[in-house]
Length: 291
Image 1 (cartoon, rainbow, N blue to C red):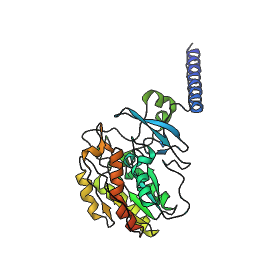
Image 2: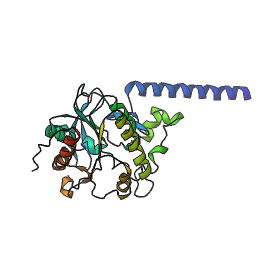
Image 3: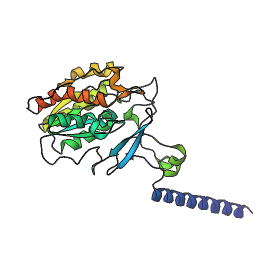
Image 4: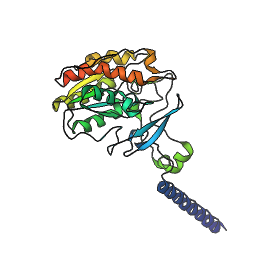
């Protein structure tokens, strides 16, 4: 009797495991649950999927905007094969969340400069994720890097970005994600640690700056305008020996329903503020006419 009981238990366990493996395989083949516009591990490192041609909903504004990405996963054309060209890095504030691609400040800046400006902004990125992307882009030979990270670094979260770990075991399965859901990074909270501390923020930027200088690439540090300034992170920037710009924009430059992201007018004003310094780094004379 006891042996028969354990045989039934073993048979049930094996059957259950086989069923779970079958379900997991079907989910993998179907690409469910979807990671949306992102690829990679949404807990630790992610980027935009290449070859996208879709629309995305700006939740707060309740409107959709277009999103096309290159084969490299950037919201732009392919990486330039020759110079001069500029790479603009950052989070969704560089990407241009809520506006069309040609309205985002990197593209507006490109039209003002007459020089290619690659929009390498990845929504949700802090300097913790952005360092590796910056180092990879440096190998492509840009003349200038604009480093626009700040907003996400100064965001409060349930844990710092450097403490994030990729799910393991059952948590890494699609079946678990289908029930539990998944999203980028930690949980945003009103109080808690910074996603990236001011010291780590500066340290991450310094890694990129040192790598850029070693390759003869010039760097412009953009302290992105915020309606509530990230004072601790801004103060820490004084230790970095590179050109900096910290534009001040009125509340009317941001979406009324979304005080983090710039609207169409705000993106243009930021591009106009950047143009003289970028032209200077390129060794050119500014031609912009500010409205």
